[in-house]
Length: 518
Image 1 (spheres, rainbow, N blue to C red):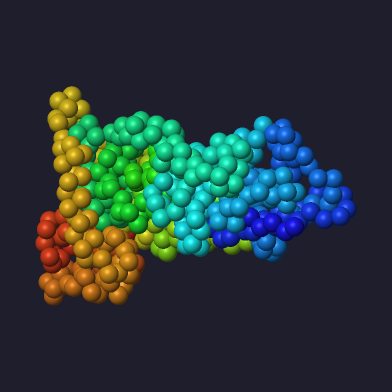
Image 2: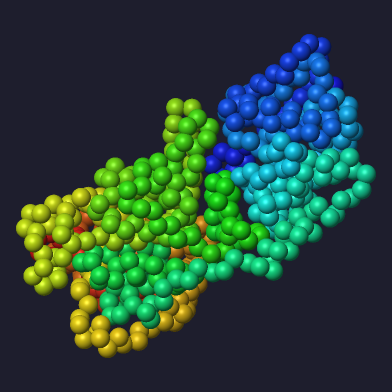
C-alpha cells in the first residue's frame, strides 16, 4: 500500500510542498531516498525508536520512504512525524482517514513526544493556499500561525494526539491551537516590551536627535560620528522607542523571516514590534548577509532587521568585506544568497543606524585630546567607501557634551512626543504610496521621485549650488531630495521648500571632497 503525507520545505520565506511517500514491499531494510541531508537520514533511527516505545512494531519487510520532489534538497528534523505516520498507515496498524487532508511537520522524541520545528508560519500559509483542511504542528510552533483562521491549526505534544486527529473518531477541538493552554498562557502573559532608552534621558545633542527623528520618519539610513561618550550609542538605542508600529503586511513578512530562522517570538501570532538588531562589529559576512550550505541557507542580520533597524556600532572597525556587502541590500532592499547547490532570496528592507569614532584614537573634535595626524584621520574615515556613504542618507557629527549641560541635566523632549510626529509623517507617506507598493520616502525610485518630489525653481537653484560646492554624486542628490520630502512631511508641508533642502543638505557631512575639512 502506498501512503502519501503532505509535508513542506522553506525556500526563502515561502514554503513548497514535499510529499512523503511510504511503501512497504517484499524484502528487508528501510530505505530513505529523495536527496535528504544527514539530519533527515538520522530521523529513521529516531522514528523507529519512537514507534517501538509507543508499542508499534516495525514490519520485517522492505520499507521505502521517498521525499518528493527528488531533486529538491531536504533538511531538518521536521520530516520525523510524517515518516512515522507513513509507516503506521502503510503497515495497517492504524486507519488514518484524514492523512491526506493536512500538512504535517514535527520532530519526534524517542518517547513519542513532538518537538518544535522552524517554518510553521510559511507552512500554514501554504496549507491555506493549497486548500487543505489545516496543519498539524508541534504546539510551540503552531502558536506562530494562530492568525490563520481560514484553516484548522492543530498544536500537538505527542504522536498519539496526532493519531487521534487523523483517525477522525472525534473532532478533537481541544487540540486546535486556539484551545490549547499554551495559547491561553501566551495571550494572558505576553512578553514584556523591551525597555528602550527614552530621548528625554539623553542630555544635549539636539541636532543629532533631530536627525534621528528625520531618519526614522522617512526610513533613511543614518551615520553618527563623534568621540566616545558623545551619545552615539544612546541615540541609536533610543530609536526603537520612536519607531511606528508595523502594518499587517510588514508584520507578516517579518514574522515569516523569524519563523524560518527558528527565532519566532514567545507571544502567539505575528511579530508586532519592529526588530532592532545589533550585531557585534566582528560578525562574519555570513552572519550579516545570510548563508549556509546546500539547501539550508538561513537569513542573516540584515534580513532579521527587515522592517526595522540594523545598528552597526564601531562601523569603521567592521571587516571591509562585510561593510561593502551591505551596499547591494541597502539599494535593492533584498539579498540573494547564492551557493553551489542553491540560491535563496530574502527581504532586507532595513534602516541602517551606524556609529563610528572619527579617528583611530577616537577623540578628534574633543579639544586637544586627539593624537592622530590628518592623514591617519582621513585614512580611518576612508575605510568607509564613497559608494557606501552615498547610500547612507544622513551623516551626523556629535560634538562632546558641554560640562554645564552635563551638570544641569536639562530635561529633553520625550520619545512619546517624537514618536507622535514620526507616526504622523509615516501616515502621510502611507497615503501617498498606497498604490505604489512601498511605505516610506527612502524606498522611492527615480520615477516616484519625479512624481512626488517636484521642485520649484528656487529649490532647483539652491540644490545646484549645493551640488557644485560639495561635488555630490547623482545618488547623493537623490538622497537630499528624499530627505527634503521627509522634512516637509514632518512640517506638514505639501511641497518641498528651500528651508527643507538646506536642512537636508546639512546632513551630507562626508560628501566633502576633503575629509580634512571636518
